[in-house]
Image (cartoon, rainbow, N blue to C red; front, side, top):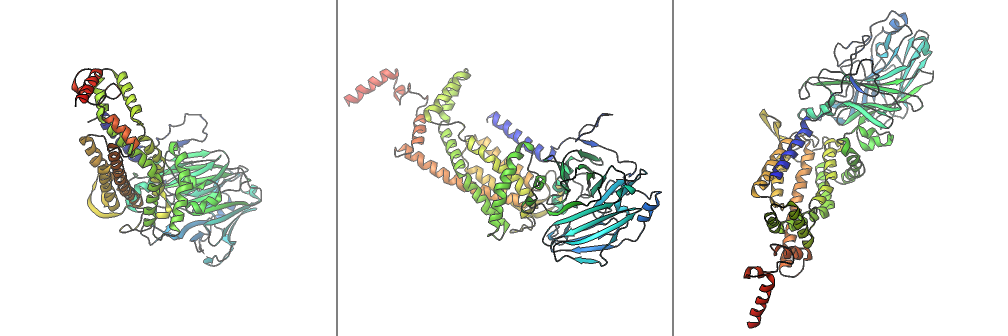
Length: 627
C-alpha cells in the first residue's frame, strides 16, 4: 500500500473533523490597560448603572430622583395587537415597544406554533437609551406611554396604517410611531424627540434591539442552530458580528463599529430582525453577546444586544426601517444593503467564490425549478441531475485520463525499478513516457478540482436554504432537519442518538460509486476508500439537514450511472484501438503499453530473441526470407 495515499487519507479526515467540530475563532486577547479600543471584540464588564443580574435579561435603571422621570415610570401596562396578513405583532404601552412578533407563514419545528422573532423573556425588543443632564442613565422601556389607539387589536388592511406612543418628560416629549403595510415584513419606526435638551444630554441616544431571536428549529439540530445565531452590523460596506460559535460560556463580548453603519441585526438560522437607520444621520454601532450553558446543552441560552449610537436629536423625526422576517434572498435583495451577507457561506478564503455561485446560479435555479415542480424533494433530485449534466464533460475527461494512466502503470513500474537509485532519471523517463503516450498526468485531477467550487457552495447553500425549510419528502417531514427514522436509547459519540435515513442511503451509494470508480490503487487502498470513507461520512452527515443528504444521495447515484457509461465507452475505445478500428488516444497509449521499456530503442519482441536490437532485426529478416 502506498504510504502517501494513507497519509493523505488520514490528513483529509483530520481536516474535515477539525472543520466540522473543533475549529472556531479563538477569543481575542484582553485589551492592554490604557489601550484605545477600535473595532475589536473584547471581554467587557457591564456598567455599574445597569448590572446584569442575569446575562439573558436587560436590567432597566431604577427610579431616579428626577420627579419628571419618576412620573413617566409609573402607570398601568396594557397591550395592543397588530394583525397583518404576514405577522401578528404585540406592543406594550410600557416602553411603547415590541414584546412579540409572530410570523404567520412560518412555523417552528413542531410545524404548529408560529415562528417568534422577539425574546419574550425580556423587557421588550426596541428601546431608546440616553443620559439625563443630571447624569442618570435612562431606558424608555421603563416609561409608560400613551397610545393613539384605544382598542386591543389593530387590523392592518391598507398601506400606511400607524400606531403611535407618546410620553411626556418634563418640558419635552418622545413620540414613537410604527407604520405597517400589508404584504410586507417591514415596519417603519419614526422617533420624534421634542425639546430633548430638557431631559437628555447633547451626546445623543442609542436605539437598541434587545435579545437573540428564539430558536425555531428541531432539537436534533440545536447545536448547529446555536452556532448560527448571531448579531451583525454593516459598517463601511463590511459586515461584522458576533456569532454563537464565538461565545464562550458565561463570557460577555462586545464589538464596537465606528463608521458609516447602514444596519444592525439579530438573526438565527433562517430569520432576522434588522434595523436600518436614516441615511443622512451619522451613526455608530455596538454589539454584545453572551451564552449560558454548553453549546450542545438542551437548555443552552444565547442573548444578544445590538444598538445604534445616534447623534443628538434635532427636533425632526429620525425614521428607521425594521425588517422582521425570513432570510429569503428574494425578500431582502430589494433593500440593496448587503443583508444577505448575514448568511454564512464558509471561510473568507472560499466565500468570494461560493457566495456569487449561490446568489447568481443556485438561488435562481431553485426558484425556477420550484415554479413548476410542486415538491422540493423532487426539486433537489432534478437539481442534482442538472448539476451532474453540466459537470459531465469534466467528469468524462477525468475518468478517461485515469484510464489512460492505468494503461501506463506497468511501464511506470518498470521505470521505477530500473532507476530506483536515480530519481532524476526516473522523472525524465516518466515524463518521456507521458509525452510519447500523449497522457497528461494532471488530466484526472484538474477536472475534479474545477468541480470543487460547486461542491463547496452546495454544501453551504443546502444547509441554509430557507426554501427547503419544513418541506417534506417521502419519510422526511422537514428537508432542513435530520430525517430520523430510528431513535436510539443511547447516544453514540460524534454520531448522536438517532439514525438519519437519507444519510444511510447516501453512505451505501458511496460504496457503490467507489466500486465502479476506475482506480490504480491496490486492493487494500480500495477497501480503505470503499468502506472507511462512507462510514466517516455517515457519522458526519447524520445531524445535517436531510435535504443535503438527499442531494448527495442523488449525486452519487447519478455519478455511478455516469461512471458505468464512461467505463463502457472506455472499454469500447480500447477494444477498437486494439483491433485497429479507431480510438487514436487509446491506440497511442496501448502502443506505449506494449513497449515494456518505452522509446524507440526497444522494438517489439526482437530483444527476446537474443542479441542486440540491430542484429536481432537482421537475423529476423533472414528467417522471414527463408520462410
